[in-house]
Length: 75
Image 1 (tube, rainbow, N blue to C red):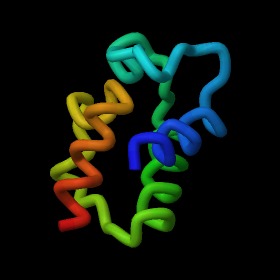
Image 2 (image 1 turned 45 degrees about the vertical axis):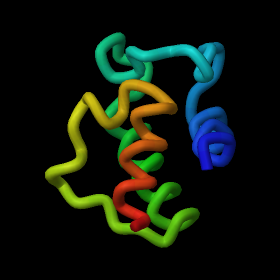
Image 3 (image 1 turned 90 degrees about the vertical axis):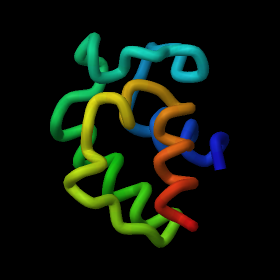
Image 4 (image 1 turned 120 degrees about the horizontal axis):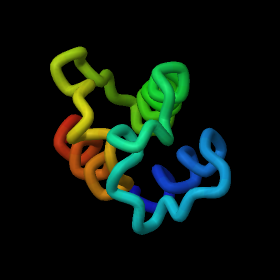
């Protein structure tokens, strides 16, 4: 799952070490449009629905945070 999320992110963001970055939101690496695109991709890829309450910086700052959120929603 983590590798798939990493691939989805790499389609959206260039020139960032996505594997180790923990400040995707805090440093403005992901724009609001990037986040919308990512949410759509995650919803489609994992057949989930990300509620508005989960769209917070802590869930989008890193690949690991995204993976944890998706795993939780996929259960």
